[in-house]
Length: 122
Image 1 (cartoon, helix red, strand yellow):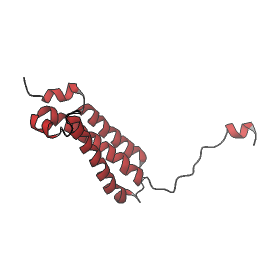
Image 2 (cartoon, rainbow, N blue to C red):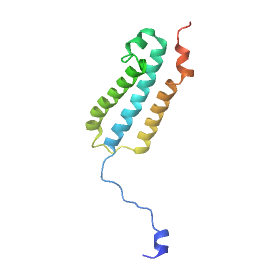
Image 3 (cartoon, one colour):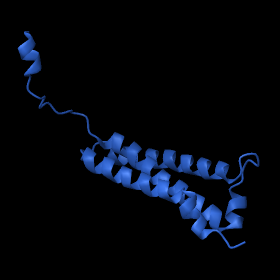
């Protein structure tokens, strides 16, 4: 093959025979879990009772409960969504877009500027 053949090659039109569903299950589970982490962070700041309930390890504080719950929900959702979506040919762009939106929402909910709006007055 000459150098010109390598630089002028046509883009591949071959598509994968594998469905995107299993990958979508993992990404969507991660996005939903990110939102849950943000919600738990905001609730923890808004309610002393929730904050205390989430303090599973005193050295870490309420972060321990928030992250363990969010991680557990990720794995449960993944286990549920994987068989549901495994044979589905989903649009990767839509899955990535929704995952990005969910992660962005979760991220905003974990910023002190946001969750301190719900903190009780001292």
